[in-house]
Image 1 (cartoon, rainbow, N blue to C red):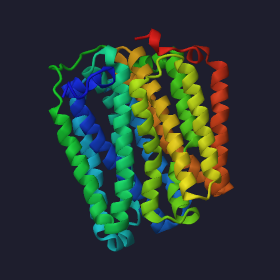
Image 2 (cartoon, rainbow, N blue to C red; image 1 turned 180 degrees about the vertical axis):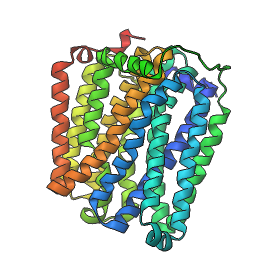
Image 3 (cartoon, rainbow, N blue to C red; image 1 turned 90 degrees about the vertical axis):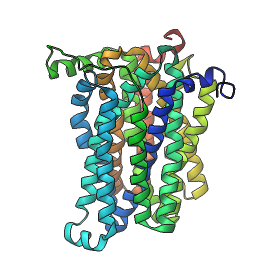
Image 4 (cartoon, rainbow, N blue to C red; image 1 turned 60 degrees about the vertical axis):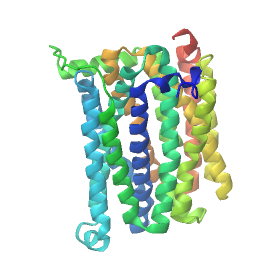
Length: 416
């Protein structure tokens, strides 16, 4: 294997634990995004109401934000691999609920409405609130500091490959074979991820005893982020860019009412940002953004905002797909930069708490962005709401450039 994958770009792949971690991530991510596509189409098919698509994000973000900071506290004290392992069971439970509900949708819909679907979304948010920071903290244990940037790039590439395959396969399976095979595949992938995490071997972990209270330790993690301008700037920039610039939640409406491409087209549209991100990830493996990192970050978020404006105005399936691909390429640069900053600037004994703050900044912005997109689409109309979001993304970028000098001058090459 070493003769095939030699060189700095593949250095972290030679770490056995990290390879198992990548397998876990790809199965789990494929299942999550596949489920997201199916749930979005299913709810819109039942309700034909864009506001319900926004409520998907709100239902997921409430438990995620509520538990994330407390999860970060325990992630820094307990065995991180076991936390990831057992929390994955929540995702498996949610997939089982969706499969049972859809097996006799007419009966369950009449008896319970769409409540079981939103129960699953709630469980997914709960799991994400724990898994987000736990995965970041665990990855920091699996690789040496010198490989953090390489690991962040591979982790991002792995996620993006899954993000290409998951939505596309989910949409195609749903469109050609129906909802039962689609949800069965989701359940199978979650189960595979559950077993993959068992293969990771970390050193014997003892529960750390501390006299500090939970709230004191949570506060110290938050204070660390707010006193580190590079972390705070990267988190804030990405949070507001995703909050205002994410059109993904409205893709079922674009696919159904504007582009007229059905669930198969929806799956492909959902995969387009990940296609661009995957291509960019392979570029970053060989040319990591270590020099003039801050400037590169700002340029890429500006590009992302412009792509969202163009997507909102497009009425062509091909043009819309190309703009989503380009937006994914820009976004992946910021993902890699943010991931590297988090690992390099954060001590290991605080990584869970800092990652939990990141989870609230970044992870919740996706769901809040979905809710914001649903509300603004209802109030302003679909196309104006997406264009407005792109413009607000540009406003956030130029504001951050003005107020955050350390991030503007950041060069990660000096931090390795």
